[in-house]
Structures are given as C-alpha cells and as structure tokens.
Image (cartoon, rainbow, N blue to C red; front, side, top):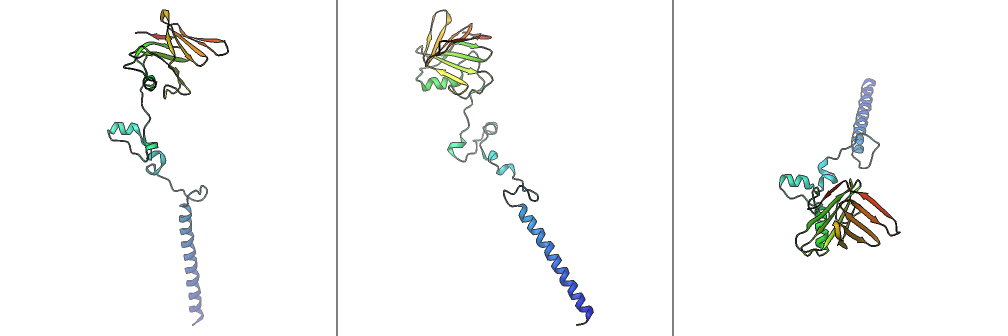
Length: 201
C-alpha cells in the first residue's frame, strides 16, 4: 500500500470516528431530554393537558353543558360537589334544607325570617310540624354545607314574641330579629350586628 493510500485510509477512519461520535452525542442529548424529573438539562418534554391529573378529573360544568355523564376514575373522586346555587332571601337555602332533613325535619320548609348584616346572613326556617332551624353564613365566604368553617346550622331554635327567634348552640345564643343579630357569648359578653336587609313573608 502506497503512502498516499495509507493517508487516505487514515483520513477515512478519522472521519468515520468523528461522524459516529457526533451521531452518538446527538442521540444521547435526545434521550437525555426525555428523562422524567430532569428540570435542568436540554429541552423539556411537555405533558399535554389530556394526560394531566386535572384533565382526567371530572368537570361537572362541561358534563352539564354536554348532557353527558362526567368521566370517572373512581367513586371517591368522580362525584361532583353538590351545586346549591346562589341562596336567596325569600327561600330556605339548599344547605339548610339538606341539614334539616338529616336532623329529622318534616315536610316542606318555609322561610320565617332572613336577616343580613355587614358581615353575615341568617335564615330561620320552619318545617311542617313547626320545628325551627337556624342557618348562618359569613358573607363573602364559601357556603359548602349547613355546618362548616364559614356556616352554622342550629336545631335548638325558639320563636318568641315580636318576631324574635332565639337559637342556642352550646353556651352561645343567637337572637335574630328584623333589627339584626345579637350574640350572647359563653363568657357573658354580647355583640350586636345591625341589619342592613331583612325579609319576612
């Protein structure tokens, strides 16, 4: 083999090695970019919404608009929260109705008084056997159920003269009238919330 032929062979081998090195590095970068949990190296693979957790969760709004049942993965997570709608001053809110049913209310519930102050609102409702129920709600806060961090449901309620209703929860007493709400606290002190809106049938 002549000197020229040997040089051409060496050059071909070197070029082949360089080509394979570049090809291998490119493949390594591509594979490295697909590794999960790597937030620092190379371009990231974007997870499409169809495979994300939020997209797999039921969407009751979308399901209601299409009339189709919401997709579900399990009984525990697929049941949409119960929608009560916006409460009104002249009807018993659904949260109170559900809580009263669980507490043994009879027949239809009817509104006796609604009082709104600058910080809260209260409904007093009566069932067909004249049992009274109290529902309080902090304004601007969630209203998920009869009893929660932002709501209060009371079954120990009495109607008094002159449109006064007295609800007792433990050692705290709520006096509800068209003038507002007077709260008698367990320590003997009291606080008053003046009515800014009131409804009586």
